[in-house]
Length: 84
Image (cartoon, rainbow, N blue to C red; front, side, top):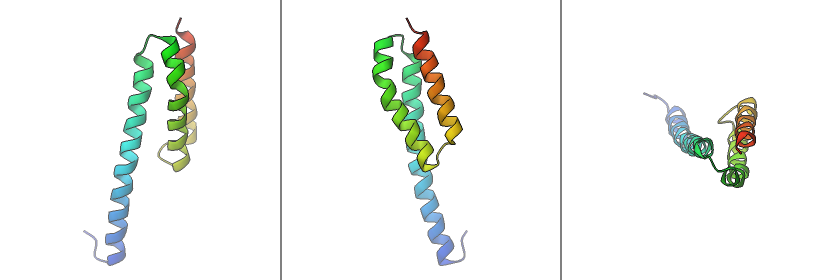
């Protein structure tokens, strides 16, 4: 365990950030999964901007890499365009 006050504080901060990042990453993954499981093109198109915003925010704050965000958004767009 940490031996200095600054190390203890750093541990507390990193644990708080880890839980925060985990929550938002999991929420975003569930939203992506919901879009990919839908068969209704209109519903998928309606939810896509919200999910894109969630993905962009994760990339902006550094939870995921910007290229991963681009790949996720591209995959969602491809899936929506294939729906009839």
